[in-house]
Length: 278
Ligand SMILES: [Fe+2]
Ligand SMILES: [Fe+2]
Image (cartoon, rainbow, N blue to C red; front, side, top):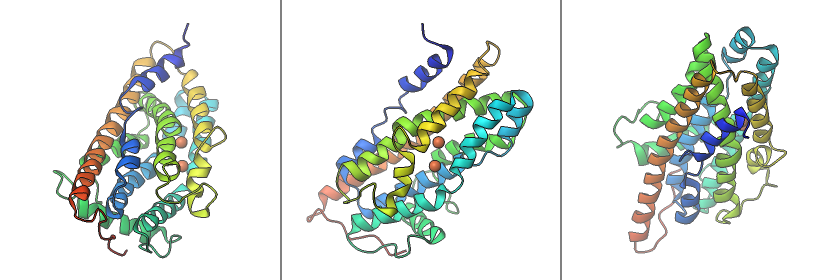
């Protein structure tokens, strides 16, 4: 018989988000540098929102157990410095795709992220509800909003946050990070390898000894301690909120990616001009 947390991971595994084709399509379409920059802007902003713990570990401590709070706090601490490394990797991949230097200083997180946003504005700003200031799609804002709830204390929100944390870590470990490795490294389009310092983000996150694998174990252990019949519905609610919102973001980015592939194939010389300098 499946254990109770196994039932929850089965929900995640059977959701469309878990096997979303976006990274497979990225590898197939070989998007132009501005498209890569736009996708990375949305992904980067989403990932950044998932890192801070806000009140969540403390609320778990108050409502659940010290052990649950510790497991979540460990995840939060392990995520602390990942923003600069994700920006460096994104800039590096755009440079490689362009075959020239688009981002000169990959260590300058702010400058790289500003450049990624301008690519996003160029590709996605026509979408209904696109926010010009942040450069975020409606779908990215909704996915980010799930993590804003970590600022709330209280039992119901804390249990929903626990469900969202479980879904986040399972998806990161088994879909998002492997998906990035597939399209950025294994597909061979960018001559990128995990040994390169610019790709350290992926090295750190990927595989059985990677950060996400540890996060998944922590999240499963934390959820396990709350799984009574009373708590379960709110945990499941949090799982679906995360999966549905991320899936909607993947859908809109996947569509933009595929459309850019069609546009590209219609150009006489299937190489598009390199992106604007950041
Ligand atoms: Fe991370
Ligand atoms: Fe994680």
